[in-house]
Image (cartoon, rainbow over all chains, first blue to last red):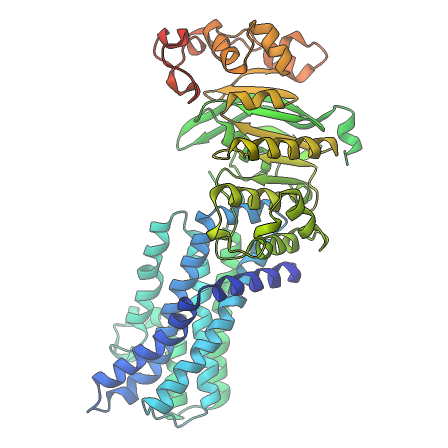
Amino acid sequence: MNLARTFATTGRVLSQIRHDPRTIGLLLVVPSLLIGLVAWIFTDTDVFDQIGPAMIALFPFIVMFLVTSIATLRERRSGTLERLLSMPMGRGDFLLGYALAFGLLAVAQTAIAVSFAVWVCGLDITGSIWLLFAVAVADAVLGTALGLLASAFARTEFQVVQFMPLLVLPQILLCGIFIPRDQLPPVLETISEWLPLSFAIDALQAVAADSESAEWILSKVLVIVAWIVGSIVLGSITLRRRTP
Amino acid sequence: MMNSADAATGAAVIVDDLHVKRGGTAVLDGLSLAVPSGAIVGLLGPSGSGKTTLMRSIVGVQVVASGSIEVLGLPAGSAPLRTRVAYVTQQASVYDDLTVRQNLAYFRRVLGAPASDVDRVIERTDLGTVVDRLVGSLSGGQRGRVSLAAALLGEPEVLVLDEPTVGLDPVLRVQLWELFRSLADDGATLLVSSHVMDEAKRCDRLLLMRDGELLADDTVEGLLAFTGTDDVETAFLRLIERGAPDLPSREPDRPRRARHAAEPEEPEHLDAADGEVSPGTSPGTSAESGPEATR
C-alpha cells in the first residue's frame, strides 16, 4: 500500500471527470430524477412512503456500479492500466484510488438524492436524516466497490457489461422491494440475508420508520463496509499484472 | 546508470529459450537473445512476427509459458524494475481527458520521480506548446509523444518502445531518433521496434524477427556485409531466401548468441516470404516466388 499513489490516482480520476461536465451533471442528477419519477408514479397512493427509502439505496447503487466498471474498463482499453501496472503502482492502490474518487462523487450524489426525496418528493423520514444519509452513502460506495470488482474480474468489455445483471439484479430482486424478504422461499430468504443490498434496504426502511436503534442501523452499515473492503481486496487479488 | 552486475555481461536484457503462447498458438517458440547495455537495438520484422509479444515479455506484462528473461540482472517484471524499465505501447497509453501536464504529473507521482521531471520530459519531447491542451484534442503524433514523455519520467535505464515512429512525418521521425540517440548517449538502453526497415540504420544493433523466430542479430554493417546488400530491407529478404544460416555465430565473443545460433533453422520455414514482409516492398521481389509461407 502506498497512500501517495492512491491519492494521486484519486486526484487523477477526479480531474478526468472535471473535464467532462455532462458526466458530472448526469451523475449528480439522474438518481434524483428517478426518485422523482417513482414519487410521481405513486402520487395518489402511499406506496412511495414505503418504497421511497429503498429507491434512495437502489438508484445511486446502480449508477455508481455502472460508472465505475466502465471507467476502469476504459483504463484497460486505453492501455493505461497496463502502463500503470508496469510502473510501481500497487493493484490495491489503484482500486482504492478509484474507490475514493467515486466515493466522493457518491457522497455528493447521495446528498442530492436524499435532499430531493425528502424535501421535494415529500418522503416521510421519522428517524435521523443523518443516519439515512450515512446508509445511502455506504450503499453508493458499495456500488463502486462491486463495479471495481467486476472490472478487475472481467477480461473483456462484454464480460463487464454482463456482470451488471449478474451482480446487481439478483440483489435488487431479493432485497425486499418486490416482496418482503420474510415471505421469500426459505432458500432465497437465506441468500437474501447475506446480500449487502438487503442490509442497506433494511437499514433505510428502519431509519424512515424510526423502528430501530441507531446502533442497530450502524451495525447494518458496518456489514456494508465489510462488503466494500472485501470487494476491493478481492478485486486487487484478481487484477493481473501479466495478461495473456 | 548501468548496474555493476550487468556490466560484466554487457547485456541489459537477456532472453533465454522464451516460449509464449497467445490464443492457443505459439507466438514465440524458444527465442534467445541479448540486448547490450547503453545501445539502441532495433527490433525489426513484419507485423505479426512477435515483436510486441517479446517486448511485453521483457517488460513483464505478458504471461510467459516458459523460459527466462533477465533485465538489469533481475527477473523481468520484478518489483525493483518497475521504476527502471519503461514501456511505450504502440497505441498511446495516456488519458485523453486530461491535459498533457496532468497526464505527466500523474505518472510522475506514480513513479515517485522528482517534480522537476515533468518539465524536463516536456522539453525533451518538444511538447511545450501543447502542455495545457487535453490529450484527446492532439494529433496522433503528439499523443504518441506524450506517451513517450511519460516513459522518460524518472530516467529509466531500459526503454522498450513499440513502434514509436508510426504515422509520424519524416521531420518528427528524425527528431525522435535524435532523442533516442541522446538517451543512449546518457547510458540508457533502448529496444525500439519498427516495421520500417530504413529506420534500421539508426540502430546500433538489429534483431530481425519473422514468425516468432530470430533471423539475425547483428550490427547494421555486419548484416549488410553478410548478405551482400546495401539496404536492410533487401538484407531481410535475402536472409529469408537463403534460409539464413545464423549471423550471430560469426561472433564467438557473444556466447548467448552463439548458443542460439547452434540451433539449426528449418529451411522450409525460412525460404518463403509473402507480401507482408514490409509495406514498402514492391511486389514481385524474388522472395515472393517461394512456396507458401509457414504460419
